[in-house]
Every structure is written in C-alpha cells, then in structure tokens.
Amino acid sequence: MTAFFALLTSFLWGLADFGGGLLTRRTPALTVVVVSQGIAAVVLSAIVLATGGWSEAGPRLWFAFAAGLVGPVALLCFYQALALGPMGVVSPLATLGVAVPVGIGLVLGERPGLFQAAGIVVAVTGVVLAGGPQLRGAAVQRRAILMTLVAAAGFGTVFALIAEASTTVTGLFLALFVQRVTNVAVGGAALVASVRRGGAAVPEDGFPWGALPALAFVGLADVAANGTYAMAARSGPVTVAAVLASLYPVVTALAARGFLNERLRGIQTVGAGLALLGTLLLATG
Image (tube, rainbow, N blue to C red):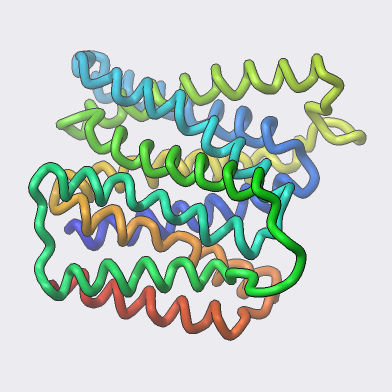
C-alpha cells in the first residue's frame, strides 16, 4: 500500500504541476496559488463538516499549520528560480527536497534493505535526469541556485510535516483543511504586497473565469496528493514513500509530451527509465 499511495501522489502532483505551469503562462503565479488553494479549502471545509473532522482537533494540527506556512514560501522561491533560469537546471535541483523526509526516516531508525537502498539511488538519479538538466548554455545565476535549494528544502519539509499532521482519516481531512487555509492566508498576504509594489493580480484582459475548472483541478489534485502521501508514509517506511512520491517530474514531463507534444530529450528518456527501474526495486524490496 505504501508504493500504491506514493505513486498515486506522484501522479497527482505531476498533473497539478503541469496544470499550474500552463495557468501561470497567462495568470500571475500568486493568483493561481491563492485561487486554486482557496477552492481546495472550500471543498475540504465541506468534507470536514460532513465527516465530523472537527472532533480530531489537537496538537498535531500545528504540523499542518507549519506545512501551510512553508509550502507557499517554497513555491514562490521555486517560481522565482524558474524566472531566473535556466529551467533545465532549476527543475531537477528542486527534486533534492526528497533528502529531507528520507533523512528524517533514517534518523528515526528506518533502514532500507539492499534492494530498497539501490532503488532509492536509482529512482532519485532518474528523477534528476528526467527533469532534463541543462548541461551547457548560459551560466546559472547564484541566486537561482540558492532559491532552488530553498524551495527544495521547503518541499521536503512539507513532505515531513504533513506525514505527522494526523493519525486518522478524518483527522487528515482536518489537517489538510488547516494547511490550505494557511496557504491561502500566506499567499494572499504576498499577493497584496505584490500589488502594492505595482505587480499585477490578474491578466490585462481581466480574471480568467473560464480557467476556474482548471484552477479547481490544480488545487484539488494538490490537496489529494498531500493526503495520499500522508497515507503512504503512515503505511510503510518514510524513506520509500518519499522517494516514490518524488517521481512527479516524470509525470509532468510525460503530460507535456502527451498534451503539448513536447519531445523528451534523450537524457529525459533515460531518466524516466531509471525512475521506473528504481520504482520496481523499491516496490519489490
């Protein structure tokens, strides 16, 4: 079940990143974050009310609150790094965030077997290559590297925090709701600050109401991925769950190939194959 839920996490996050990337081509990234997460928060509030999730309120919600604070900061750093580029360096570097939950799992005493250890190495290598690392071209700004590493650390921290935010399914719904409300508050504050500095909140032709279904999908896929990752981490070793959940760049690359007809570079194809091999080693180990 760990492998199933972790791979489902990668699938959902990969599609959410693909959708979010398309939306930010026309709409400011902060607006995409706030609106998509706001829709997810509304849906989660209804689920929490229907399942009686409020009864699960307790100290563990601080983990969800912390994840809600860290997540938007990591995402904004990631977007800024992408703006500085090159994307071929930024994208694979961001996957290094998997080191955070894996490291925590090792500190807590998890010891993967031989096949699982090999699977971790192979899968992480595959993910980095699948991002299409740029091997030559324009020099990379130090600020872009720094922002990417901050984003990676933030993504990995969210992985670790959300896994600790609940012990039951109804409690997980409440934790995800708290996380999303915090996301919206932090992102909204950043959006207001951006507008005050002269930034745009919507495209020149107005708010893209026709994109609401896509915004809803991005927000709900993201929250579902957080939920499936929490279930993966609870049902098995965090070291395995975190690595399998970090395969989402492969899904994003394949989605771009299927929907936008973007051709995979040779190094990306090799990376996708290694990621699959690493997945098989982890699942059978």
